Length: 71
Picture 1: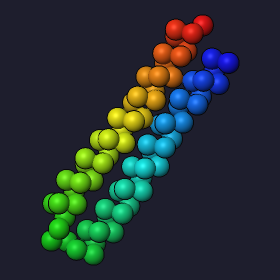
Picture 2: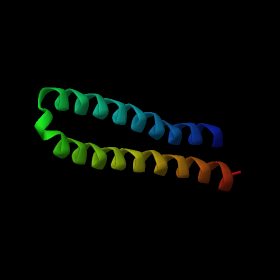
Picture 3: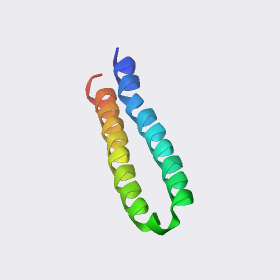
């Protein structure tokens, strides 16, 4: 049961990876369409990636806590 809980918590990492990948792809398309707005696009992209990565880190920490403390 502990392994199942940790696996479910690890799904946050999968979601964050997909989210960052999609955001990067869309930012690349946006810069290709409008190169003069690349600095604003980059700022928004970095903020979004940081928030998505924080979600992945929270999921990883929860997974570790489930494994280590619920044995």
